[in-house]
Image (tube, rainbow, N blue to C red; front, side, top):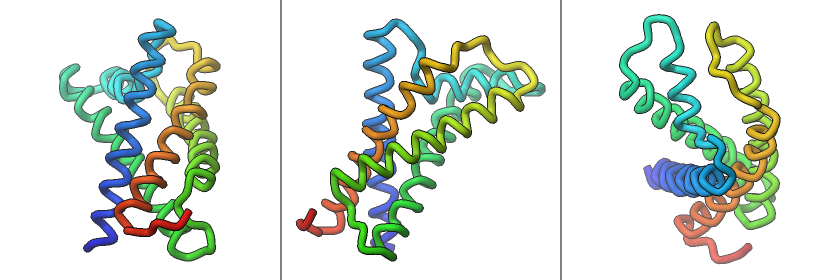
Length: 151
């Protein structure tokens, strides 16, 4: 049970830090890099979708669920190998997650029957940085909740 709590707390902190980063950059660059909003737009534009509000809630839920899935994978790596949660592993895992994320977003936009118009190239570049923020905050939180002071 403690292990699950560590994963959930790390996922919430990491995903929240990433989202805050994306909101700040979106405001600064006057572009929509807000992952939960873009997910909500994709959901809303599906046939037989619900209200805009329910699509946005689903977008936020999906965003945090994916973050949790990434932390489950990170945790397995940290538990089963010599790699431990640290700034370095968080940065590298975040960058790798960003590449996986780009693949997922690309697939969603290509497979979607009615995707919103979006220039994906700058969005994909942003995703790498946002996921690095995610990975770092996940690693730090995981380490703190583990009581492990070694890095």
